[in-house]
Amino acid sequence: MMSSTAVLQQENELQITPFSPIGAEVKGIRLSDPLSEPTRARLRKAFTDHSVLAFRDQWLDAPQMMAAVQIFGEIFPQHNAKFSIPDHPLVHYISNADTLENGKRYIPGEGYHTDHSNAAAPPMATVLSAVKLPSVGGDTQFVDMVQAYQDLPDEIKQRILGRRAIHVYQSSHSARRLPQLSEGRRASVPDAVLQPLVLRHPNSGHLALYINPIRIEGILGMDDKEALPLLDQLLEHATQEKYQYRHVWKGGDFVMWDNRSLMHKANGDYDMNEERYLYRLMLKGVPLEGANG
Ligand SMILES: [Fe+2]
Figure 1 (cartoon, rainbow, N blue to C red):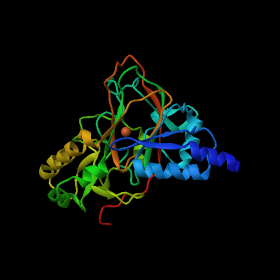
Figure 2: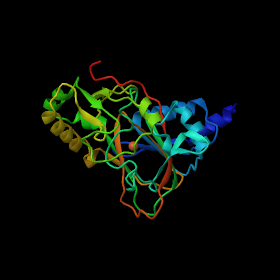
Figure 3: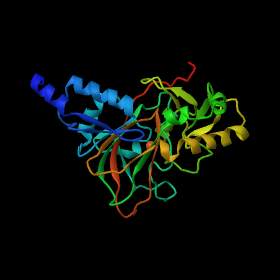
Figure 4: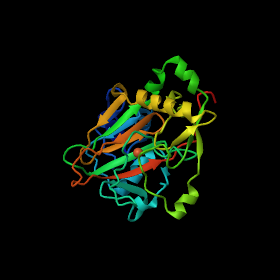
């Protein structure tokens, strides 16, 4: 139990400083310390309000990371066990040192996307803890899909409201190649899942555009001749700079984001002889509901 003085001190030191247009930095806290319930509640609210939370200088190892994320939810088992770290299979790593089956270097997270939209209940959040970083580059960019939806012309909103898209592990329309799943994992990843094109956020209630160019195969009941240009148009609209927060990584950063209200991408714009290595885990989400039910 924390003393009431310690609880008050923790509350006084916690600062949440919004970025523009989305995201916030959380200061005055060490995630490896015991945290009081009022502090945990403020962090959960900040996550709903800002969609990205960045904590500097945390240097969490895998067990500390697993403990810290319990504030927000339960850990989501990942699709591809190939990237598990030894001793902690729920924690994966992201590294630029890996290659695909064809021998090409695999740059994790390139191109805007949202994580695992082909799961029946996609992960609510993804969390990264930076271990090793290149000296320049490798930023992560996030775009605000709530504001992007709000700004769409009414005519487009009417075309997409109530529609569902077909999400698969690897879209045949995507140029980005993902690592192949092992036989065992393939059996547990659904062939295709329908997700709303406009979702109602389970926590905030806001409407958000929900697209994912690496996993969307098409729009249910819409011909590809109409659906593919529409999806391109939505992507181009949503990835404008005015919707973006760009995170410039520093060692020890702990960053988490909401997969229902954002898309994100990593940049492969750095010297590939330098290592970029982060721990990653995701948190379980709920099945997504469309704007009208
Ligand atoms: Fe991702």
